[in-house]
Image (tube, rainbow, N blue to C red):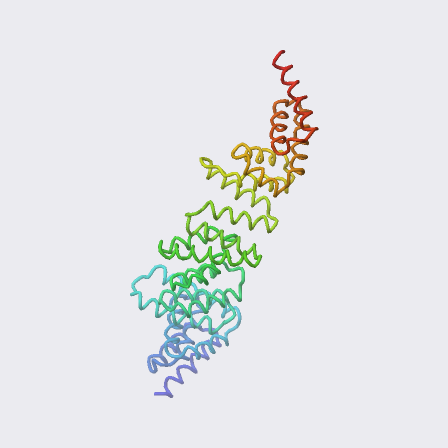
Length: 386
């Protein structure tokens, strides 16, 4: 009866105060035998086992108590000293992880049911801990309760903005639910901070959804460019490149333009250089002109001249038209002349001559360029005679 199990509880509490945890466990067990619905007895025995270091039995008692009244269990745990409370919560979290990974001697439904109760207990005891919300979200994902899982992942992101794993999981769930706009917004934020993690997530997405995600990503990038949000657009292009390798060259060109607008010239050069490498069998004049202008911005005049010379060799009229727009014929001729003078001073007469030749293609009326070309030609002739 009620009086009997209350007597056992009272004696167990006395034993606990006296420091005799073993005796307290026996009395709490006796109380539970009399009244199997005794949450107080289950929690009391769990706490004694906590003090004795009996992790497995302790967590099992907490699990049983949660099945009866999770809020009463929460109150009991909140009454523990801080160190004891931290250890108990750690044990519960570890148990959820181990049980879900190993699945020893339990059916999946039973595992998830046990994990669900313990996960809910963790966030009930400490709602401000992002780790518990993330763990609970994983359980919900396994149960197929995606919307509720997303709610808890959002709490993780709010509580711990640098937690990229929460962003990755939320992105993956949105893909699974065919919410590609939201998925692209989440996953694009990982493109520049956790590329390896993003690649791992993308492997879990089937080819059809990956294609749709890539399409949505490009759509969002173009919308962002239209309102001059180049940094965000860059991240979307990065995601699209990882999601779907098709149209790689076009995506690299677009990302390079974003990087240029952002002032990240070295990265822009890297992207356009990759384009030039990928199109080696069908080179484009515009790519060389773009990289040439980028080299000018970064103060690499010699490399700029090489790129513009290559562009002129590929298609003279198109190259001259592009040069006229940027950096301008006069500006580029001046740079060509400076590079030619430097080559001459180093006795690289052939190099000087070649630069002058290309400079005169840009502006055939440049008198100084003509004079320098003639001098270089004479020096070349002397070398041949000698």
